[in-house]
Each structure stands twice: as C-alpha cells, then as structure tokens.
Amino acid sequence: MAPAQNPISSQHVAVIGAGAAGLVTARELRREGHTVVVFEREKQVGGLWIYSPKAESDPLSLDPTRSIVHSSVYESLRTNLPRECMGFTDFPFVPRFDDESRDSRRYPSHMEVLAYLQDFAREFNLEEMVRFETEVVRVEPVKGKWKVRSKTSGDISEDEIFDAVVVCNGHYTEPNIAHIPGIKLWPGKQIHSHNYRVPDPFESEVVVVIGNFASGADISRDIAKVAKEVHIASRASERDTYVKPPGPRNNLWVHSEIDTANEDGSIVFKNGKVIHADSIVYCTGYKYYFPFLDTNGYMSIDENRVEHLYKHVFPPALAPTLSFVGLPAMVSLSSKIDTYWGFEFTYHLCSDLFFIYFYQGIQFVMFEIQSKWVAAVLSGRFTLPSQDKMMEDITTTYATLDALGIPKRYTHKLGKVQCEYLNWIAEECDCPLVEHWRNQEIVRGYQRLVSHPETYRDEWDDDDLKEEAYRDFATKKL
Ligand code: FAD
Image 1 (cartoon, rainbow, N blue to C red):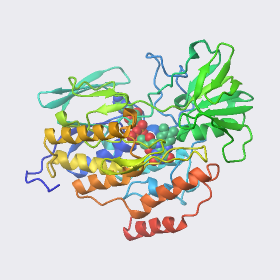
Image 2: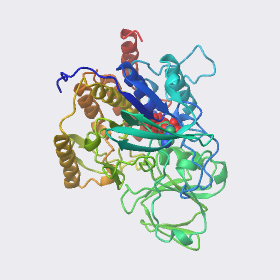
Image 3: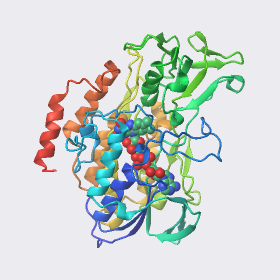
Image 4: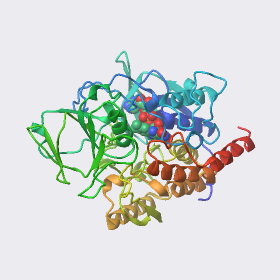
C-alpha cells in the first residue's frame, strides 16, 4: 500500500498487557511518535513467561470467581523453537555467556525467555511506560475515543481517555475444556494444562492426556516419567489408532479420541480400548477472552473466531483506533493441502508418526511486524482500505475457510502461511520481510520435532541455518 499523504500525527495510546506482544507494541508506538501507557496487572514484564508454581484453585478453571493465574508455563518447559528464530529482529535472543545464571542452550528453559524479555524491556527503557499491578477492567468507545477503566491492587479504579487502544492481553489463560460423554459421573481427578506445573501429583497413576499438540506432547512425556501409564487421546488420529509413539518411554500410548467416561472409573476410547484411569489432563487449548472489552456489539467471539478482524488485527468498524496484536497462533492437523488467504495452506498428515501435530509459529516477530503496522497506521503514515473493502476481505476469507471445511475455531491458526502473512503486512508498512533462515529454521525444526520428539531440542542438523542467523546478526551489528 502506498504511504498516505496525511501529516503524521501522534496519538495517545493504551496498550493492554506487558508480555512479549505488549512490550514490542509499546516500543514501536513510541518509535513512531505516539505517547503510550501500558497497563499490566502483574508486578513485572514477561506475561506468559512468568512461571508461577501456584496454579488456580479450580483445576479446570471453570469457577468464574477463582483468582486468575495468568501463566500456563510448567516447570520443565523449554522453548519449542530455536532461540535465534524466536527473538525480535533487532534484539536477537542469543546466549548470554557473560552471566552464569543464564541458560545458553539453543532451546532454553522458560526462565531464559523471561530473562530475555526483561533484557529487552531494559534495553529500550520500556518499563517507564508500564503501569504495573494495574488491571484494565473496561474499554469502551466514547465519541470517537476510548474510555479505559483500570483498577490497581488497592481497588482504586480510574477512567482515562485514549485516542487508541491496542489489545495484547495474551490468549493462553482461559482454558477450553473438551466435552466427554459421561464425564459428570466419572470419579477421577481432572485438570487443564493451564494448571499443570509438575508431574509429581501423578506418581504411579494411570493418566489420560487429552490433546496431542504442543502442550499435550510435552506434558504427557513429563507425566510418563512418574506415572504408571499415560494414554494420549488424540482427536487428529484415525479411529482405530492405538500405538506407542517414537521414543524410549514404554508406558505411553496414543489412542483415537475418547468415546465415553463412566461411573466405574473407566475410559472408553473410540478405538475400543478400555482403561481405568486416575486422572484426566486436558491439553485442549485456550479461548480468546477479552472480558474488559465493550464494543457496542461490533465485535464478538464465535467458536473461538474473533469477529470481525481484518488480517487478524483491525476490526473494520472500529479501525484503526482499536487493534489486536498477537492473535494468530499455531496450526493443528488435517490431511488437506489447499488454499487459504490466497496462499498454499498445508495441514500436515503425520499419522504414521502419531505424535505432535502442530506447526510452530514465529510469535515474537509476528508481534513486532503487526505492531509496526498498527503504529504506522495510527500515525497516518499508511492507511487501511475502506471499511467496506476490509469487510469484503474478511467475508471472502471466511467463505474460503468454509468451502475448505476448515472449522471456525481454526480461523486464527496460520501454520505454514504465517510467513506469507507476515511478509504481506511487512510490505503494507514498508518494513523488512521475514529472513530466509528464520522461516527455514521453523520448517526444519518442525520436521525434527515430528521425527525425533524426545531429542529435537538437543540434537539438530541445521547448523547451516544457525550460522546464517548469526552472520545476519553480525552484519546488522546488533
Ligand atoms: P502474554 O505473554 O500472555 O502477555 C499478556 C499480558 O497481558 C500478561 O502479562 C497479562 O498479565 C496481561 N494482561 C492480561 N489481561 C490484562 C488486563 N485486563 N489488564 C492488564 N494486563 C492484562 N512461543 C514461542 O515463540 N516459543 C515457544 O517456545 C512457546 N512456547 C509456549 C508454551 C506454552 C505452554 C504456551 C501456552 C505458549 C507458548 N508460546 C511460545 C506462545 C507464547 O504465548 C508467545 O510466545 C508469547 O509469549 C505470548 O505473548 P503475549 O504478549 O501475546 O501474551
């Protein structure tokens, strides 16, 4: 899109959340000349990566009165991406050999990611924009501006007016629970992965883990270290699936999905197998959730599709003053190869491996590129298409998804097309495209992860890409 002819204007912008998305958004907005207030309900930056050994009081997180624990990180978590492709483009996530307390592994622990985000905030003086322990409880449009009501820990609330609001509140806190016929009478323990921290409570148990995507794959292995048996129920697997996944554990099985749970403690899988289980762990994902947002009915969430959003960022009727950074996520499995967003869209068929069916995403760089776009549109350097044109684009997209039989709940899962999506936005706002090595590291890392799920974080065959990345960092003199 051609740059707009308008004079550049500075806006007063509220950013909700100081995780990776909120931090980079604040930086890009300030770089563009806007004034920024970041609202963060925690005491520190880092969002999801602030590990808490404490989980929520309700293990399924269904009780609306429970006090929320934001993070879904478990103690053993290591990144599922090589660090060099995870970091922001001008602040690489490289090992800090100068500090012995840091984790220099290529796939480091969650603590290293938090330390990286703290370094990032320090380097760009971002904390001076953040109001900690301040929760946004209401956001509503008022006469072309936005009223933001926030509450501090002392329960004092305040209303302020902003020209624009960018929502960066994360989307891994509100659990999605799969419905199982008969579960109400099933007597065992149930927990969602949001509240999973360590395997110890499952010692010597027979455990069913529902879901075989990122968290399910990791958590089932974590639990298998101490449990008697772990049975993974995988919706993506064929009906007669009953296999041992690759790897050394001999107490781990993958089944097709659960058929019923019964009062006598048994779980019946669609493959006909019956087991008596002590616990069920739901690794069934999360829901988009914006409890503070009142858009006078312009926006809604339908089967986890946030409607309506132009390119997952701008709601046409409220754009550009309301925007969302960080919505798209990873992809799950089917056997289709088709077109989506005008690009080739490949769902991966991995049924011969029966494990880990997800495609990793370049999350931090996505936040960076989306926020550059938001900042540039708000300043008037670039303009969006008309409201009608944006709606037309959205309608076409939804129709394409429908025609391909892709469920609504996958609307924001981009998978392989993520790179094309990001490059499309980058071109819109004239910023650098995603580097070749970064995209290739994701592709090759994914292949390794599928073929060697137990070892992919410690053994690899893409040193050529790693070297290309470090050469790139050196050239850019970062
Ligand atoms: P968050 O980090 O969740 O930050 C949102 C912030 O908003 C929080 O600080 C929260 O306190 C604040 N907030 C929310 N509501 C309010 C409110 N009303 N008022 C004020 N503040 C509010 N990505 C990778 O790139 N690599 C990985 O290896 C990887 N592993 C993952 C493992 C797990 C288990 C999960 C769940 C996700 C993983 N991800 C990974 C994806 C990860 O979510 C993103 O990388 C990223 O950290 C998300 O950043 P965010 O800023 O969008 O959200």
